[in-house]
Image 1: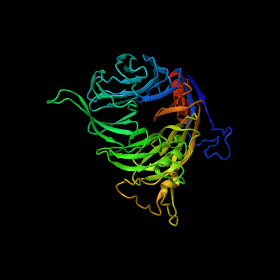
Image 2: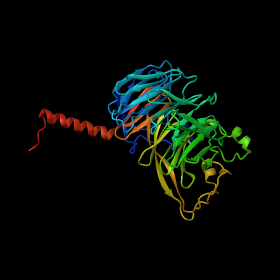
Image 3: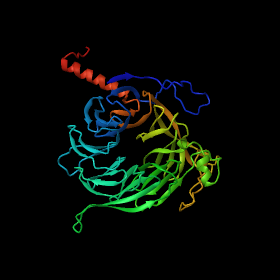
Length: 459
């Protein structure tokens, strides 16, 4: 474990002057992360981080190992070895509130076609299942029913001991790529360009068997779905390889908003030509979403877009937020956004409001202005003309964290312990609030001096 103090921003390092990438100077006055701790334990790409409680997290990746860490100190607590190939999914399975014994477990799936349940307190392998016909790509927990679902070529329902309760028939060779829980004991599964709603049926007096039923198929995406996230109690959002953003009603599964065309709006061709002749697909692929009560934040290619749920329009964007694709984003409580990229950087943004002057009309083609396209013709209501004094926002770069030498796959945010990032360089980095850490060290020194009797008050 290495602890470093850092104090500067990113050097341009050969960027052309005309590069649209926003940079920040050496004095990052609004960036609190001025210390870092480098954690070395993995031997291959670290792809996953999962928070276990207020001070612990687990990491996993292509070496098949799971490491449990202390987020405050960077101490390695446990090493969980059992998979023979890379890990493809990991999820925490918390105990029910009514359960007296609060044992925290995690589930891991691997390309070796096994799923393992681990006890996070002891490192013990609780259960192992290896009856899968294909690799499990995603896991989700239905907390109310105390069951877990695994998605691959089939969708399976398991109890806490990994007893198979029920499963679907073979879905497709593509397999389930993402799963989320929605109300009424239902889940949404992304399979290629389709969304399928399934309902998990628990045993009753009439039927003692578990069952999983297909309820509905949503076929509105034109290409493979890359991201699927719950927005709030009312809606969820999906994003595709060709830049389609769709917001869905979480109860009746109807489309609430549909936006497309993150490419150059000057290319107004017919629908089939648009996808072929637009920018490179990676430039418009929606890799990740995060949300708050007001906005959906989308990682689109190398850019960041802020879509307001009430206005149903983009209110801010950074088309070139990073040099390469943005892989993961998260919203912080103080109107800040963090993003990480294939270029190895982690960047902090602040969403700032800016008021249009009354004499300045807001462009009616707002999505075209930001690189979006026309509004979906299927939308139930026409988009209202924006008021002339409507408020839009900007994303301002306030921090640039340079520590990884390769793609940063994802990160976790701890309110009390800072930021945790994982990378293809096999490293995990804890980014610490320098001012807070300095205060904690001073307090510990003060307490030690007081305990040893070496603290004297000046007369």
